[in-house]
Image (cartoon, rainbow, N blue to C red; front, side):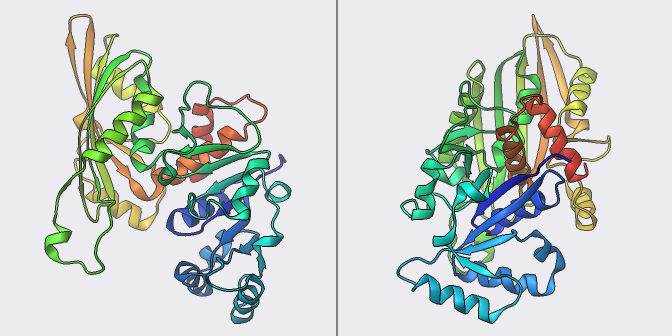
Length: 361
């Protein structure tokens, strides 16, 4: 049996815990280290672990407590947290040496605590460090299966910035046709990601936000990943409380493709579920996920796939949905496997298929 990839997690909030849980369920990974701060999120994690076996199973093998100076002394907080519960035995983060414990670091808190000693160790860490989209503009953008030309380099303190949920869902679709695509256009409806007041009223819950800033970022990132393609992001509209993002992708292809050709390519694309004819809503998908979450995060409505032939090329249109809860999670696992693929025998597409298999798709 091959040696498992040892992952170090900094931050076990919503995204960090989902990544840790998915990694712990994989046959080739283990979350060896978790670094958390004593806050409300940690208290809620411990409460959930007290009654939920799956939460306990997802916890890292070793847990370290990072105590900001304004909160108190590390030794005191470690002692308090160990005395009040029996689920986790914490150690102080001053005892942690990343390079001895991990092959790869996933930091969901960065750039918070950027000057902390635990983050300063990144400069001498021999593996790769994966931070999330909120770390922009730090790090080399990675959106599996794509890394910018020259981006995949190993060395101490190599920082990679993961794609967000939008790119995690869009990039595999573009990549499926990138060899013949000359231009693409994209329209998106996503969940609102701005800060809301502490109270929610109907007028806020039903509000529509036109996000020019997000539109520019998406266009910029896609252009970095696919420099040979002309990119037009027509709009990004956001509303609160969406389980699935929705997108429309139009691509101009140099080669003529029939609708059947497009469907065949999509059926072979990792992380994509080609929905059967007759499915035109995410409602049945939501019902299916409520019973078992073993669906890929990118869902293409096959009835809405269309093609139009013009002189010397074809124009294809794809309407799809992105399940935001897992899109970035599985992309993180792809990135870990890509960056730790020391034998170099697997392509990024092979690695994405491996992630799909481990996830039960």
